[in-house]
Length: 146
Image (cartoon, rainbow, N blue to C red):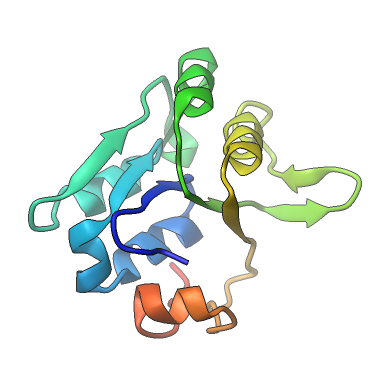
C-alpha cells in the first residue's frame, strides 16, 4: 500500500504514531510524510533525509495535533496517495468518531481526498498483519502504544 515515492498523510493519535515508527527503512527512504501530528513530526524528523510536510494550525495539546481552519485548508489541498487515519471509534452512522469536536474534521477530509486509506481504532491491542501493505510497510506487527 505504501509504494515507493508515495505521499502519505498520517493523522494524529498514538496508534498512527506507532505505525509511523514501525515503517521499514526502505519505505522511509522514498516516502513523503504529511502529518498534523506532533508525535509524527518528531519521529519522521529523526529519519535519515526525511521527506516531511508539516500541516500546521491550532495546537490541540491533549491530542498533540494541529487542528482548525488552517489545518483543514492545508489538508484539502494535499494530494496524498494514502491516508493512515486513527480514530476512537467507527460506525456506519457517525463515521470516524473521537471525543473532541475539532479533531475529526481533518481525518474526515483526508479520508475523502485519498485514493487509499487505512483506518485504525484499537483497544490497547497490537495491530495484527491483516493487509499486505502493512507487511510491506512495517515488516511486522505494530505494537500498541501504552
